[in-house]
Length: 163
Image (cartoon, rainbow, N blue to C red; front, side, top):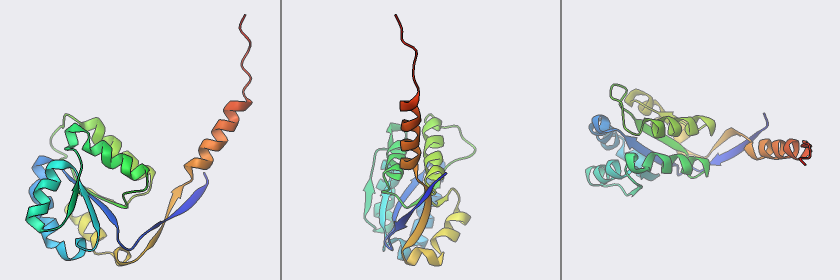
């Protein structure tokens, strides 16, 4: 696999997502870390963002609610390079109607090497990292090179003629 470097700016684009049973936990975490979060651009799924904004006084860009496609919107933003950091307090004890979307979001975060916290302790470690305060060179697979090589391989395949 060929890799490339993506520069995360000092002002990170942070996605904040929480399942219903974890929303209070995320709100408490965000209030505690308000001083750090204020310096970054925040994105959240709909209900989570609607709760975060008044609770913290921070500006939060709100997407659709998770079950209505918000998790997929965050995943698409990761693919497009518009999210640098994911805080996703998901509920490991309760099945969600949109579980496939949850898995897809976590998969995209992994595919694109996006720092991800799924619990408060990990979120505390990530948000308090010295790397939060400056730009960061994130190494990601060069999927464009992969696609070019794949397209070249497909173009070289000669299919038998049908009569």
